[in-house]
Length: 247
Image (cartoon, rainbow, N blue to C red; front, side, top):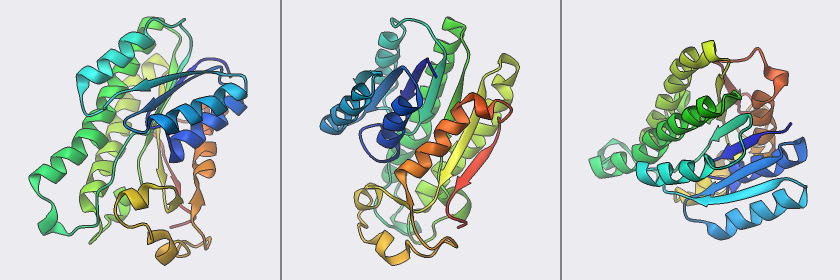
């Protein structure tokens, strides 16, 4: 599949797996965005280019609209084509209960997970309209949005609930333009996000609790994302796909 695929948070985990698999699947140009992990982004880009695709590495703090704007100003200089967006950049904080959810913590998390995701989508839609080539969007949510994640990180769960709702509304808004918008809700996945949230042993404790008896992999999530972006899913929009092993 030719076109420009923009992946935020592509330096590790699901974003990196999606970039690598996208190159293998035929996407010709892939934007490898990162927030802090430059080495991870460059490693991802190296794999992408080894598969014959063109990689563009961009750094931007998605919680800062001006930084996102500068990235998209540079993207606008590229040759027009069909655009795919994997709106994946996000963060999780340490396990906490309600009394730990200070305004400062919640604001920081929502600035990245919600406001950043909406701004990236807004800029992407602007580029889609400017280029006139159409495209598709996949927002990365989480099973936490429907499970609630009590005594762990209900603020993170709430931020992903916002992404679910945003997906539904944006899909309705863009459907007349032929732009499809879907979301994916990963479950327990083998990535570094648990360690970043201060709970590196989480998968060891509960990774076998899903009905399928194991945690998922980043590659399994990437497969689902790329299907939603592809023409094989041409009649799929306003959908939220659980990839959770039945959890």
